[in-house]
Image (cartoon, rainbow, N blue to C red; front, side, top):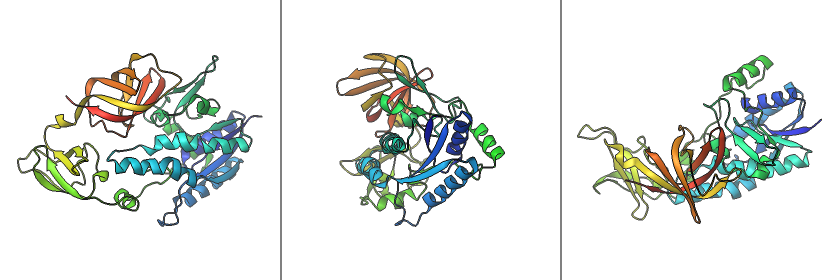
Length: 357
């Protein structure tokens, strides 16, 4: 009997994944990752989640363990998260967390427990082809597909992984959990920062980065208010600006740009053309398993909750140039451009520069 070590979070997705793997004849071991030291912020979500892991594991009759990767998380993910915000960019730590923790130290620890395979409760699939290549596939439940967050995984990281929810919808997961009587059958999906969870974001960030207040100006350079620090704002944002509506009746202000050198937040209202771009340049590209060529057409997403867009990709020595077939709104440096070909996620890269006009 093959052994699978499953990353179990305390949520319903990984719980049902454990049951599905058992049904497929695997010896399943649950491994809970404690990746954030919560003693200083009065939050006890990890303790609550681990309690759910224990109760689900007992219900399913599987062994469970807990491991602490807080040091690795701070060094490999959280430092990057802070550095990006300090530069005025908007990072996506979930992507890095998958590459650096869930499919890094977690996989190594799982092997030490005797794992033949590792598994997670992600909504996606994997194809281990006869030629030795490993392909990342979109989930059957397109509304929950999580390939966007796995775009940086390497071939070695995909080589011995299983994704039990590839062909299962979220509603089916809930139904299975209810029928099994699992304690987390109706548990709310986790949101917020990967492994840090739901917190007051501004208050949380203030613990690690100093505030640097400055002027809010319109696109003509006129001062219309004051901001509390450029790191707290992202392109297209309307809420939390403290500006209200406009006197000319053209609607609420939104963030149009960040002037890092002058520490100014640039806002606009009405016409959103200032948010539109025609292309981007990205670095740190990872291809699964390899690019389609030096130039190719495919589809891409520039944020998780977005439909795929038609693009033309050109590989350069210093990165990837991506042209949009249709102008795109609020493409944000620090986020990931993730590429698709049919049912396959073929890779991704970090957005560094956006081209207007």
